Image (cartoon, rainbow, N blue to C red; front, side, top):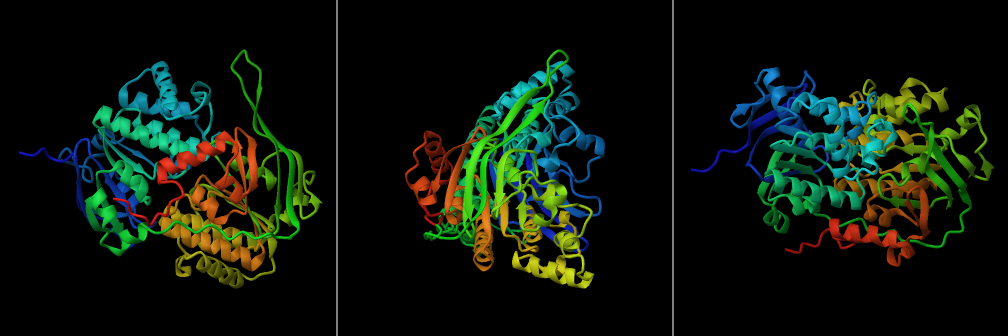
Length: 537
């Protein structure tokens, strides 16, 4: 007699306002098994997982059955559910900034899980929290216990979320895009860690991803979702080597082609010299304040209509560099935009330049107000920079901007929570582009998107660049994205640029050992620079 499944989904349906977004989903998860839910952005993968743990808003209607060891999670009393949720079944969320409380240190948040679910004392919980941070690759874990989420990079916040999820060594783990925000070296380490936990603890896992290369590395069985339904299922190798459904075939598409790079006599639009950012960190009772240098004497330049790709591991200072260039964080050094020194300008002096210098942030959920409709979010900048426009004109511009990024303008009265992570990123891009800036800092603009949607967004960014002569600072841990977009590349490590030059030179013949290690990690995790459409089975 076969062992009953650990988790069983039976005819699960999820509806928002009469619109069904998860439709009759059924599958099982055995003990120790890793199954993958894959699909394009908006296919219903995350909603399926959130529904299973009853983490959706109260107005959402859920039906069907999700059984854990025979108990239906959808009908359990709240007290019994809380005893299972987090302790027996845990989840790694896709957007760590929304999963972590901004008012509490990461150490106190991990410790709270251990004290509540495992009965640890405060001291035991903090000691274990440091061990967990070390386990997931956080440098100086004891010092990081006192850090708040906003003081960590996107990748570091994701690792904290993973530490919280595995704190109580659950029986089942739902990993919702756990490596989306991570660079290739950390992603490889996290995948290895999840594999080790599965082997050591007999951990069962539902791995949610749009990246079939990652799925192929971890999962033994795969379920492909499209428009809320499972449209193809089977052993991972069989599905990967011989995809039957068009949705599956769409996930195994060619990587974006490298950009054709030509000598460009365009004028310089941006120059930064000896740009440095340091934060003062508070010590203990008997220790003074110490200075932590996040950015150290960075010098770079960018010409009009060109793209500078910035790569490096999580915590290297990439996002801080982007914010410093736009004067969003205090920095020392010189910043020259279109021949004008902007380093000494106050906020009043900077305001007229803000529409010309826009940023797309890494975490779209944190960057979009949950209380506003997306049409108002996209057009918000017009209120400041084009105050004479009527509301009707602003609404028309918002509809046009949304259509440019493949969001149905008819949905502009909805709020961010009603869109997938990838759709929210496209909304964030529309908000930046509506002002027709001349310089855009793109902080991981495609990290939450499936490969097909990434290609659409990269084509869109290329088209906008060609049409308007935009200059991009593109921050990404995805070397394929950098290869597709960048004319020049700067490689960062520990707040410094260790190598920079033309993209063809950096990607083809990297000189610095650190750059070569990034290339090797990309090859190990995703098959390097080979075509994603190649199916070696």
